[in-house]
Length: 70
Image 1: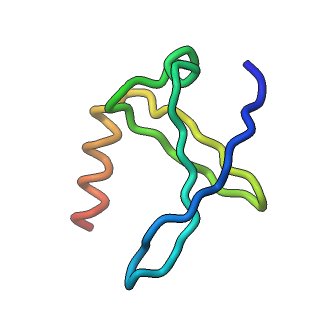
Image 2: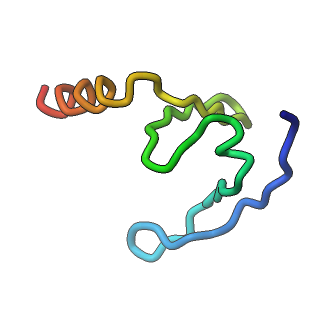
């Protein structure tokens, strides 16, 4: 679908420290298959973020709960 040029903003973090913040919003997210309430994974590489929609949302939530218990 192409590229988007966005800005990295600052937001308040712990102990009033400024931290980077990236906002993603717009109908283009819906066109890519993202819906309100969906779960995503963010994979971090050097200078790159990869955002993937988690398939089987309910299963992913249950697995996350189990990981927190361990």
